[in-house]
Structures are given as C-alpha cells and as structure tokens.
Length: 347
Image (cartoon, rainbow, N blue to C red; front, side, top):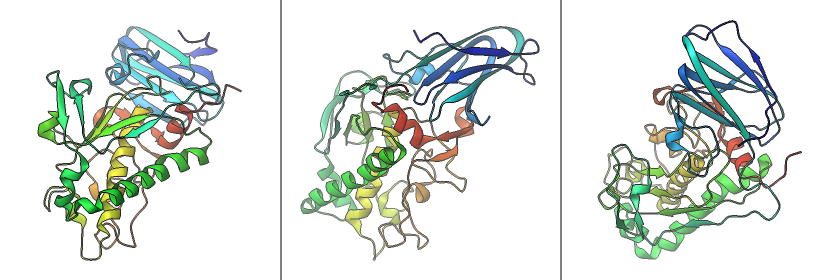
C-alpha cells in the first residue's frame, strides 16, 4: 500500500467524454504515482505542476507491470508517472457518465536508500532463456530456448570474429553514454541491472527485434530481462531494420553496429525503468521512439549513411507519447529513468 495521500478532488458531476473529474496529488521529487480506473471510467491522465499532460491512457497498463510493482492494477485504463520535481500533480478521469472507481497510489523507487545497488549484465555470448517471460501477444510456449551469440551475426555486417571485441566495446561505450552519463547529469544514481542476450526470431519464438519483460515505473522489479535479437539487424539490405541498409563505402562498420546495438539495448532498458513508446515520425527523435523510423532511431545522418561523421547522437528526452498504442501526453524519458533508479531518500 502507498502512503496516505494528500488528495484534493474537483468535479462538476459524473465524468463524461467531454467532462473530467480531477484529483490533485502532492508529489515529492522521485515519487511514483499510479492510477487505475474501472466501471464507467474510460480514460485516465496524469498532469504535472505546469498542467502538462504527462501520460494519458485508455489502456489497462497493468499487463506490463512487474508482479513486484505496488502500482494500482486492473480496470479499464491505467497511468503512472515518476515525478521529476516536487509540486501538485493531477489525475484526471473521463468516462461515460456512470459510476466509477478510481484508485491512486504514491510510492518510492525500489532502489531508494544508501547502498541499494544492481548490476547490468550485457550478455553477448548467447544464452539459454525461457522467452515465455516476455509479454508478446499470443505468448510463447514455455521452455528453455538457446539463443545464438553476437559472433554468429558478424559476417552479416561484413565483419569477422576478430572484430567482436571492438563491436562489444563500441556497444558498451554507447550504452554508457545513453544511460550512465545522461542519468548522472540529470541527477540520478546509475545503479541498475539488466540482462541482454542475442538470438533470432526463430530461436526466441518472438517475431520482433527487441522486447523487455516489463514497463516498470520506479524500477520495482530489479531482476528482469530484455532481448535484442540480431537476425533482422544483420539481414541484407534493403530491409529497413537492417544495419546493412545504412552502410556505405565511408561507414565505420564497427562503430555503427555498436551504436545501433546500444540504441536498441537502451530502448529496452528505458521500458524496464518505466518509459512508454513515443512518436517516431515527428521532428523529435528519442531512444523511446516506437519502431518504424529506423533512419532516425539509428542516428543516420544527412548523407543517408550510418557510421559517418554526420552521425546523429540519439538520446532520451522529452517527446510526445505515441497515440496508436492508446497514449497521449509529453513524456520525459530521461527523467523517468533518472528518478526510477535513484538511491537518494525523499527530501
């Protein structure tokens, strides 16, 4: 259960599609607020102290929450947000005019407190993993699956086994830049964990490139996993998802492969610390963007190639949540990570 909440309610009658009920909630920096609505409630939204919508939802978000998460679950729609400043926030509810139940809870990140620490494990050597743990529509038959190591895919990028260490070094360096350096700059504590393994769609049973186990605001589950699969990334051009589509005669192959892997690893890590997908086709490109705009997400420069001097450094930051998944509002994905992994106590 969360703490006793300082909540103020303002409404003018039963909520409808054109009328909101608002509940004001005081949050300290780093607080994790969650809300779920059932009954006649059809939509729930969170607003920050500047009255910006930070996460509107018509979707039951509990399907992505970790079992360890204390956030409200179930119902018609759910929302959550990690506060990056102290102040009055608001939860707004829309419905069809009937009776509803709205549950709001406020919690602190799981790693709060001195000495709380995790370890990131980036596994490039392949692994045996039960991929049924991942929330893919339709599911995967339970059981261990062997996933191929990174070295099995190097030839697909025109590289050799001798390049493996350099690719791994480039990947780790870019992950550190995406997460460690930027999170520290935002004021968070870089203490978090993840296991990433390679493999293919056929090996994993999941037809995707990357997938995380949870979307976990506040990092309530500290032993979760994510996958970045490498078969489509190493496929021949002109497949849009393939790194090869963006390689040219002047490309630094090792650097571009490493940066692309780091981008996808960072994207999945973002989910594991509470980030939802953002709009991929607007003018703002972030590491939380939904798949589709590979040119933007991979940092391909104006010359149309990756691994060249005009490479674009893509990071976490503010962007509009993607509407086709049931979301609305402005997400600051860097702040969500920074305060989900903080070890600083409440002020």
